[in-house]
Structure formats: C-alpha cells, structure tokens
Image (cartoon, rainbow, N blue to C red; front, side, top):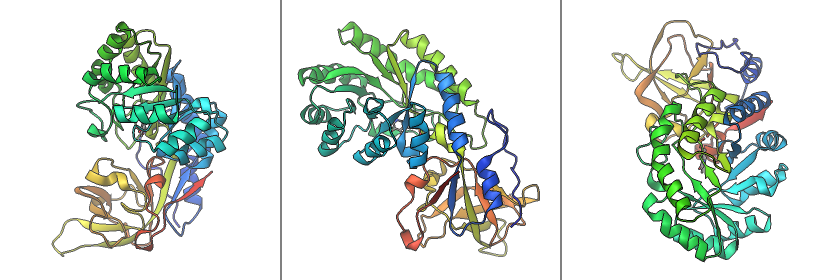
Length: 390
Ligand SMILES: *Cc1c(COP(=O)(O)O)cnc(C)c1O
C-alpha cells in the first residue's frame, strides 16, 4: 500500500504530526475503520477549555461514545451531556461523577429519568410543560434548565425547530417548574452544529439574553447559562484555532450576559472530529456514459455505515489519497449499499485524482464526530464502522 500524503489541509494549532494519519498509513484495513487519537482528543479538550475559561465543558456524548474517549475526558474532570440511560451508564462506567453529568435531551423516557435520579444525576433539560411534569414525577426537586428555540441559525447543520420553546413561553414554563417543586436553574440553547464563525453566535445570543435578564428581574434566580455546542471542526474551510474560537464566543457571552454564576458548554463535533480519520477503500471507479465528464466513485463506506451527515451534502469531508498532487476531475461519491439514497456527494461533486482506482485506500479526514455513532447495525450486510483508539 502506498503511503498517503497529508493532503493540502491547513495546519492547525495542534502538533503537525497526525497520529491517526500515521497509523492509517502504516496499516491495511479489511473494513472501514475510524482511527481516533487519544492525544488529539486530550489536546483539543485542553485547547477548548483554555478558551472557555470559567465555563465548564459538558462533552456531548453522542458525537463519539467510544468508551476510551469518555475515559480520557472523565480523567480530565470533564462534564458530560447525556441523552439517554445508556449514555449516562457509559459516563458513570468511565468514572464520571454524577454531579458532572447533565441529562440534556428534552425528550426523555420516564424510566430513564428515574434511572438518572437514582444514579445521583440532578440536572435535566426541558422545553415543555409535559416534560417538566415527567421530571417532577421521576426526579422530584431536581434542577432544570429550559431550552430556548433559536431562529435563523447560521450553522452548516442547524438543529431546526425540533428543540426548544419560543422565548414567549419561558415565564409560564418557569412558573410551572416552580409549582412542580423543581428548581429553575437556568437556560440553554444551541447555535446549530458546525457554526464556522464565532461571530455567528452574536445574533443567537441577542435572541436569548433579553429573556435571561427578564427572568432574573421577575425573581427567578437563574444560575446556569448552558451555551450548548456548535464549535466547528476543520473540514478544510477557514476555522479559527479552538482556543481562539472559544475565547471569542465567551467574549460575546460576557458582553450580553455579564456575570453568570455557572456557564456550561457542550462541544461535541468541535472536540472529537479532528481526532480521527476513517480509513476506507475505493471499490469501483466508473463512467455511466462515455461522454460523461464526471466519474462515479464507490467507497466501502456510505450513508448507512457512518457517513450519515452527508445528508443534504451539508457536511463535506476532506479526502486524502496516495495520488494527491496529480491531476483531478469531478466525481460523484457513493456508498456500497443497494439503496439509491446511499450517495454522499452528487449536487456538488468532489474533485479527486484521475489516477484513483478500485482497491485504493482513501482517507476521510477529521470525521471523529457523528460517524461511528451513526452507523447502522448491518444494512445490506455491511458492518457498522470499526473504531480503533490509539
Ligand atoms: C448534539 C448536541 C450538542 C453537540 O453539538 P455539536 O454541534 O456537535 O457541538 C450539544 N448539546 C446538545 C443538547 C446536543 O443535542
């Protein structure tokens, strides 16, 4: 197998030696494999935490739930944003203290709330009356934070209207929580995933801040501002270094919220994406018509085996091959399964080397987030994404 170049990606603030890429270069793989570097997870955690200052990281577990990743973060004293009983159990098993775990899903099973409560977890998210009632029944006296709907997100992967309540509903929800015996601890929001510019947080913070101040003026003793995730990964676009980005966000928060007792951030993508690359293989390079200028390139990994975020071609991963530097041409990229939805990039084809051929290794860069956790159990008999933590 030929050695694979590091490609034309811009250098970041981390060490230029890339352990996961070196590992992929040195090994061959029977199945698509996500290689995650422990050193990179740790370095990124430290860089983000440095920029966030007094704000505490609660890692969004769904981005990459590999037990080794959770353990590295738990050992650093990180907090965790968990969305289910299984994610909570994973964090506890890695040694995370229950006080450092928040149950941040606004759509919880009553049994999962009871499990969390029994395990000593005391902080829950809600965005509706019904969810507050569930929490009050299963975790009496717990602290809650209310998630506020964000409009006009500038993110590459906005989180839509599925989460959060309109700000106008906050007074009534806070009163209801109070009447149910819950502690109204704070507010949360999410700017949308892969928000590439820190400045894009400003209009979102402007939506939330007046309601924070109004609630405090109305006598609700809000302590916690949960600024969510949205910290970007480097997919080959212009992204500020993690500590700089986080510091810029915190300056915007400070300017609008002033002194807040507790600030919590929930990076997922921005913490783990850059720590891992996928080693994949080209299965077929074909033209559908002799006159076609573009080629179809089929990989052994697709939409159902880890690359779900290519949906809508919203997230565009950078690729590295042994032929980089040679002449390139446009390619439609697709996965191996017998489903026509299993196409990764078609509307905007990907430039890949003309020399690329079936059997070649291809590296999908910076995809340590939202890949292994998105892989199906075995659609068409293709296995879920293998994960190797080095
Ligand atoms: C998924 C999620 C996150 C992480 O978002 P990223 O954009 O990956 O940083 C944070 N908070 C909540 C509540 C989430 O659901």
